[in-house]
Length: 482
Image 1 (cartoon, helix red, strand yellow):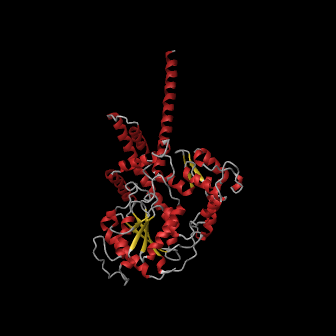
Image 2 (tube, one colour):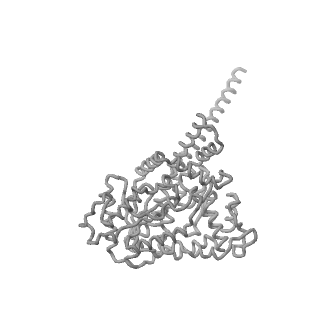
Image 3 (cartoon, helix red, strand yellow):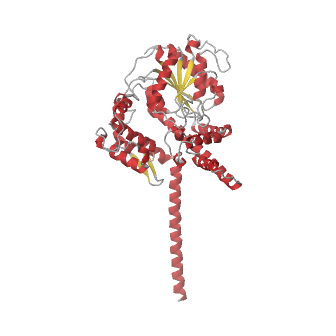
């Protein structure tokens, strides 16, 4: 690798300041801060600071790619960009979708263009699968894509190339969730054991890979794991922004409230109208697994959008009672959005800790890996921006390190054959894997459910005891009177 291969990644859960730091780093590498004032060069490790080392931001947020989804995805505004070029933002129509292979190819092109200009690519975003696809050279190869392009999709006849000679329809959208999962169970039982039966998008994806490539997705992943995660795609410096859970919870709730004030209701309704205009049955919109409909916020606010759209199209006169119903649906949707956002942040942190951080160890890791606590925004400049910029400057000054072997022997990637599901009968939930099961068993919702079940059982026993006592008293009184 040459110095030209150097890339900076700013990762972290939503609400930790990734976009802000990406802009700060890009400006700092150009020698100015947000106010246009020069950065002091006494801590720059003698690195020449000029436009040659300026940064450009590449977004890896799978929801910020959609046009018209700016508020709900917290897309960086023109003012927040501070003149720093941003790529991979707001370029896909709401009713379209982009596969991860396509995204990776587009991002690689953007990164190459930025490096050709003599600038530093600063990758910022919270869609961890997309981040991971850029970090590792073989984490997501084009082999599957090429294999799919060579084989036509199977129809109602048997496809000899399909695993086991199973019949996989060309149009999977016509199948119910139950039928889709049943088909996957017969075609690729390992993937069926890994996926939740209600995760329609991933179930379809596994079937499509098996149908179009003639190879099971579980086997494809296993093959990729043998070669993936062993070589970095770029000489990489990763900066992980983290915030204390109680601080982040308040921050995320405040962010959702701010989105509402900025016009979230109007934005999601406009998106709903766009999707509804191309559909006969609008009831399918909320359950869609493609395009902007899969974003956090769309499903949570779905009941409100459907009801509001129905009122618009039927030109109903919205009386006070109907408006009250809409307001209540909106209020419940916003609360669900807050909950979903917090859970998403937890999943992001889990991904970074278990799948990325192990590769960033100081001795023998693939990447430089640095972590900053952004809980106190008042200390941003001194505790986050300035030290992060010093780290990046030092990283750019170093000679690029050779690729290191870092594969499955480190135990970072779990074996596909060990995938299994767990059932929580108390909560009627299906959990994927030991980690998810253990988290659920320790969760507040599970404890509350268990406590509720215990109270119900105790109340039932008390009621039974009272009934027996009354029956005994009646028999005693009957004998006395007789």
